Every structure is written in C-alpha cells, then in structure tokens.
Amino acid sequence: MNQPDGPPKPSIESLPVELKRAILSALPDVSTIKSAVLSSPSLYNAYIDAHHQILHEVLLKKLHPSLVSDALLTLRSSKLGAKAKDREMVQTFIQTWLRDRPPPLEPKWTLPDSIAVNELQSHVDFFSADFASSALSANPLDGSPDDSPSPPTEMESCRIQRAFYRFELHCHLFRHQHHQRLHHPHEDSCLFFASHSPWENEQLACIHDYLYKRLSIAFDDVAAHDVDWGEMSINYETDTDPPGNIWKQRMLSQGLSFLRRAVHAETYSERYQLLNPLVEDYNDYSLYDGLESTNRFEEPQSDLADWTSDEKALLINKPSVNDLDEGPRAAWWWTHEHNSRAMFVASVHHRVLRERGYVMWDRARLCRWGFFTGSWAPPPRRLGREAFERRDDEILESFRERSLIWRVGGKGWWSKDDYSHIKWPKGVDETHIRRHE
Figure 1 (cartoon, rainbow, N blue to C red):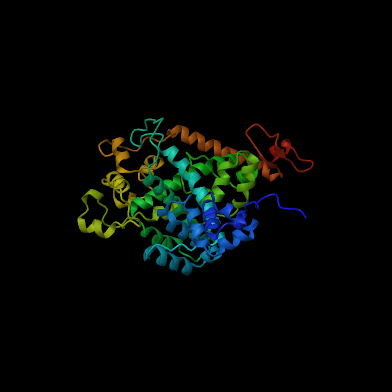
Figure 2 (figure 1 turned 90 degrees about the horizontal axis):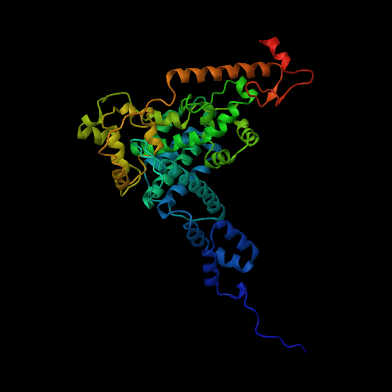
C-alpha cells in the first residue's frame, strides 16, 4: 500500500474564510476579483456573503473616498439610458439628487456596478492627469512656461476628477435632448447648473474647453479631408470656429469613454471610422449652450464688486461641495469682480485662464503664481484679422472643391492638389469635376 510522501500541500480552498476575503480585498482591481471568484468555488463562496465590503475596499484603491458619491451619482444617471429622453424623468433626477442635496449615497456595490465605476474612473484618471499636465505647464496670468510645476495636491486632484464626473453626469442627462423637439433643455439645464456655484460651473467650463480641444485634433483631421464632410460644410480648425460647433458638441456628449477612443485614434482611418457615424445627427442643446445660459442679462448688470451683500447672497449659488480650500472661490471672485453677471461662466474673455484651470487650484499655488497681486487682460486673438479671414477663405474653398467631387460620386480622403486617394465611380475621374464648376 502506497504511503503519502508528506503532509498535503496547502491550497487556497483550505484557508479560513476570513483569509480568503482578505486575499480578495487585496486584489488590485474589481476585474481581477471577477476572474478570481469565477475560477474557484471556494473563493466565490467567501466573496458572495461579503461582496459589498470587498468591492468597496478594492474600488478605493482607484477611487478617492471623497469621490464615491460622485461616482455613484454618475452611475445612477447612466442607468437612465433612453429614459433621459423623458423631460420629467430628467427634472426629477436633478431635483432629487442635485437640488435637494440628500445625504451621501450609501455604497452597496454589485460586481457589474463596480466594474462600470472602475472603468469610468480609469477614464477620469487618464483625462485628469493630462488636463493637469497641460494646465500647469504655464503661469495663467502671463503665460510664462513652467517646465517643472509641482504636481497637483490631493485636493486639487479631487477637484479636477469631480469636474470630470460632473461632465459625465451632464452627458447622461442631456445626451438625448436632440430627440425631443418639444423639450426645453435649456430650462432643465438651468436646474442642473443652479445646483452648483459659479466657480464650480466654471470648473466644468474648464473641462469642456479642454475636451473640446482634445477632440478637435481627430475631428479637424477628418473635417479637413473627407469629401462627404466637405459637402456638408462641416467646419473645422479650433482657432476659427466657436466652441458651439454643433458636430463637435454632439461628439462631446458621447462621454469620456468615446472621447478617450477619439484621443487615441492616431490614423485618419481610425478617426473616420469612429467619428463619421455621428455627423448626420447633432444636438439641439449642448454643454456649451448650458454653460452660457447660466449668464444672466437682467439686473443687476453692474460689476460684481459693486453688488450689495444681499445681492451676492441672493444671486450667487452656493457650492455643491464643501471645499476646504478657498482657492477656486477666490480665483473666480478676483477674476470676475469687474465683470457683470453676463460674463460669470464660460466667457470667451477668460478662455486662456480656463485653459490653465484657474478655478481648480489651491490658494497656495495661486499665490505662488502671484495670481491675486498681478494683473490680467485677455490676450490678443491667436490669429490676426487678415490671417483669420484668409483661413476662412481656405476652408470655404475646400468645401467648394470637395462638393464638386461629391457631385460626380467621388468619396474618400481629399487634399488640395492631391486627388490620388479619391475613390471614383466607374468611368469617372478628376477631369469630370471641371464640367460641374
């Protein structure tokens, strides 16, 4: 009779349930938890009775505790889906979760929800790091470069990430508004923006401007070369179109996952395949519209510095988050003290300041920049009047040339004086264009 060679080898199945749960809680992300519990019935049994706590502990490795409520609210809004076409549904959501300001949501994670939040947080991390790197590369007042800025503090990082969550929340609530011709999305968005202070709305405007610029790299590449897009006169070039470009706004409304794919699309073909399905549809309402609608043109129209205490208390919305640092609030007040309420949020005059994320930073960083002691004025336009008009003429001419190609059935990539990539119908070539001029 064979004798065993020694004591049985230890296995994960033989561990106490407390150790199994500790192992699961030590895993790096929730996707790894899914793989682990599906690979072992013993781990699954240990997980199933404590999954809320295990998932919460693992999520906190990626998600700052102060952002849990933002993540949960954004997750909840994503589940509206097509229900967001229902105006009453959107209004109820905003009133319940933003206007009434209930206590923070209690996380009771399921695996699908935690995987969704984990994925969203990865997009928030990606864009937040890129935004901070770009914004901190120069002094917001004089534009002088800073080659080695100090990294964002914990509070600054949370502020930036919260603004990206707010962007995603807005996408979920208002992405479908173009389907409802009888809706009044501006009225609904007023409820959304009234739930936040003007400096919090300006933080969202910073994110809007940043994402608009990042999207424009891929968008402008296709818009400058595709024959069909030229026939549709889809405008391009960030310096010559306003942020209200309806096609870009439609694409922004797709959210962070889509925008990250757009940023990572490096070739013309990749960009075209991603963006082209969206060009024949656009929103009647956009985030840019909503931000602009927060600016008021009724009285008082005096400068903010001349407002009475009662006017400030009545007309300046309270912040939705108790920020322990006064930097964002102070930066907004200092910037707008000589502005009327028609310029409080997303003003073109403060575009360069938003590029530097001026309402994202702690007061200590702002003071190191000399923000409150210096002076600032809007810089001149990047393009002078003659250059601007010349660029406009070039764009219009490209529309004309591509429209001629489109009329004879040509498709594909076009460039001035280069028709080699055009796909022509049988029996048609470049010479046929001249007959339609």
